[in-house]
Amino acid sequence: GMDLEFPVRQTDADRLLHLQEIELEREAGDHSYGRKAYMAYVTEGLGNLLEWDEIMMFQRKNGSFFNCPSTTAATLVNHYNDKALQYLNCLVSKFGSAVPTVYPLNIYCQLSWVDALEKMGISQYFVSEIKSILDTTYVSWLERDEEIMLDITTCAMAFR
Image 1: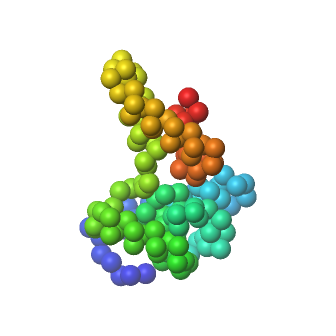
Image 2: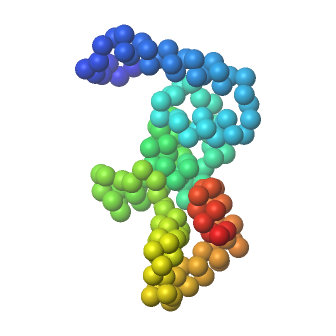
Image 3: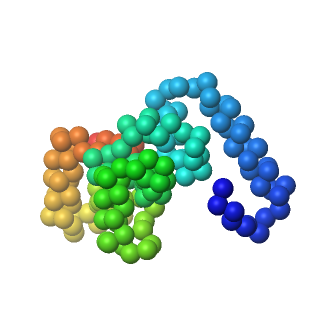
C-alpha cells in the first residue's frame, strides 16, 4: 500500500503472499491462547489482518509486546498506545537508532553468565557476584516478574 519498489520478481512476491494466505487459513480455526499469542508476536507482517484490540492483552507492564521493539512498533502503528510509545522512546533514547531485537534481557543475561561460569568450573572465583545475581533473581521470582515468568528459557534458568 506504500508503493515501495523491491528488487524481486513478481513471482517471488506472489509466492510469499500465497504462503501467508496458507498460514492464515490454517490458523483461522484455532482460537487458542497460544495461537493468539503467536499471531500477536508476528504482527509486523499482518497489518489489517489482525484484531488489534485482542493483541492488547499481550502488552507487558513496561509497555512492550513480548519485550520486542519491532512487535511493539507494529502494534503502535496499528493501534496507538501511550505505554508502547513510552517503551519505544525509552529504547531509542538509550540505544539510538540501533535498538536490540529484545529488551530487557537483564535477568536472562545475568543467569546465562552464572551458568557459563559454572560450566567452565570457575564459579568459585565469582562467589559474591553470583550470590548478588541469584538474590536479585530470587526477589524477582517471588514478585513473579514478567521478565522471568514470560520467557521459558529465563524461567528455567531461574528455577535451576
